[in-house]
Length: 143
Image (cartoon, rainbow, N blue to C red; front, side):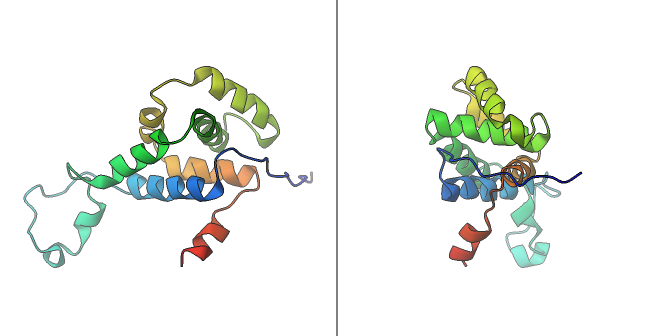
């Protein structure tokens, strides 16, 4: 069985915005519960582990939330549909159906919903890949 390549749809959300959110989602997904709430003040003493620990006041979650919340409605709908596509709720050929379902479900809590989605970064990347989209070019331009 051969798969026919998917022509990427024209998205409302720009690829650079989408990739920024994907990167922030990956950073947030990597966070873990702190091992030592009384950690030393010198990160070198802690083998630099604190960068991956989710301490109160850490800006990673807020940056991700703000990036999603700052999108317009159509961009948020596409982001939800991409997440569902990456999770396997829809297939690439069902993209229009995924968008319609996301549009019906859209509300003011989209950012909170997506930030609370486990492995959001992986799901977004999988959804993008299913549609033939990649952050490779965007990442190359930022190196």
